[in-house]
Length: 75
Image (cartoon, rainbow, N blue to C red; front, side):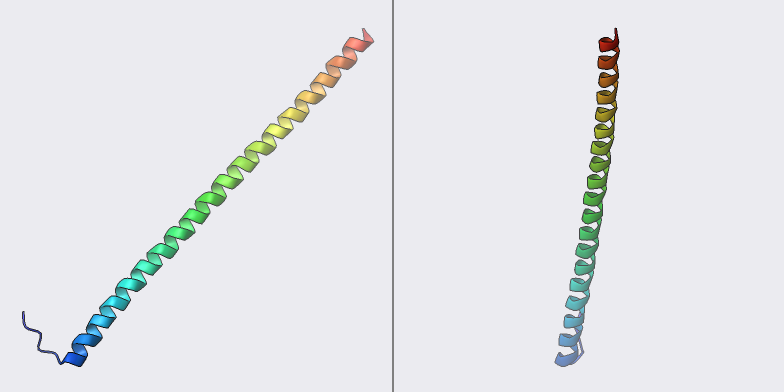
């Protein structure tokens, strides 16, 4: 196929094509980074809530052990 456009317009069209390609790739990279950050935040909050629940269960077990120790001393 023969391109009958002047050299200036051919160059301008090529630059626009490159700009569009770079813009699309940039947007994809930004969204990928945003998704990755959201995933990391989700993992962080999941494990922090898990740690908090483990700490609560540990304190409950300590309270139970204190109660059992008091009952043994009363006997």
